[in-house]
Image (cartoon, rainbow, N blue to C red; front, side, top):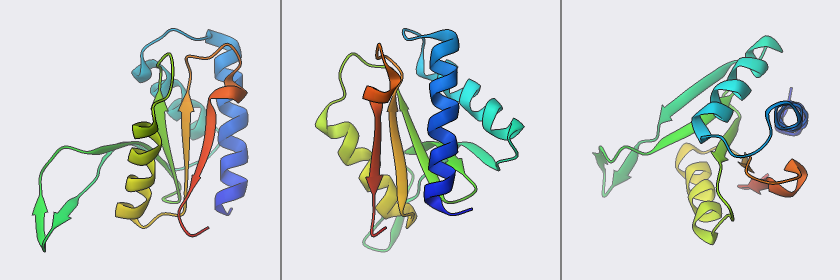
Length: 125
């Protein structure tokens, strides 16, 4: 499966979760629900993946973490906020660049309609 096929499944699964439990929960609740459902669909799911930060050739331990990494191809950054800020998009793009991945989904579960909270971020895709 390529990045686009994986993202299609992620989006569908995210919408089903949102229909089931709605907005207003902590990010960790959505992260765990999405990880569970994607594993049930047969995806390889990594949670809270450490994101190395290398500055001038020195690895810095600064605690950045990718919420979910699916099949080692697609990053999912989960939010549950009233409004996404520009920094959320920048952070997600930075994760793509640092990890050398091509596609990320920034998903804000705190929306009336989840389709309004899903954003594709690309890095040379």
